[in-house]
Length: 402
Image (tube, helix red, strand yellow):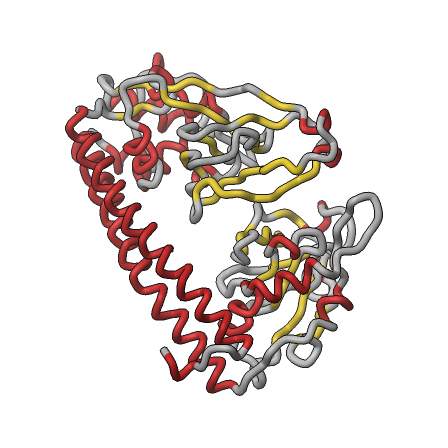
């Protein structure tokens, strides 16, 4: 790997100021990279290092599970701690998309797992170990063909995902037609609200009150939902690896990590299929989702707000509703707090929504399920293509055969 990667050790403060809002990164097990909430450099313990678009970055602990990928190109002031080594890529020798595919191969993962080191169960892989890995680097034209073969496999899934986005827009339009004064309440600097509907002083609370005033017959979401607060104490089973789930605005609910019980220092919340949960600090940008099929011991952070439907709303319909700009606009002014605003379950419960006829819910829920099946079928095809790609990378299948 050392022939195509160069270690980057530029400190964040060599170019940025202590007051700069740094974007720290979360690396998923599928190699995707998501931004965390921006934080001033001076408020981060330990030294930060600069990350630039297209850089390779990995987690020393979780790289064995796939936490290695390329930094995105649409984020400013990206930084990482020393737990996340950073490398620039020699693009004269390698195609960036080929590097991404290389990291996803089973052979590469096996190599990494053979290097696990550290005492007391801390399974880290050090930069020098990664740099010493020998990987196939075919000529650039071959790399480009492999990347193109993979790209072709993505088209069907993108088409299905586009259909889902269109359905979300359709639901959003339906919601707007049921609502009085939506633009006035959510965007205008001037709005009217009854004093009795205002729970506290502030612009956000004023907008929430104005929304209720304009739509007095809307339902209160909390009348159809309930908070889920059951917790587990993972340290009671210290050797067990617990499946910890997170939520993002791109993936919805996803498996974030497998963590040994002894590494937990707080009770975590239990989740089940059909539950919903959200990140209280990022709900306004879409970090909400429905829990898919998960193991019986699935858990999530105690910071996340977990809830479920009681009656009157179909889970599949609710899952689609959470994706709409309409709902996210309501989340935006139902949050509380100053600089770092949050939406707790109590705030979510106060959101007002139109009454949804069952035939409307069924229409959107059924269409969503059809699209999700198409996405699932596309993913199965992608899985087969992934096997072909791996054979191309290790040289057992010619790029001319497909």
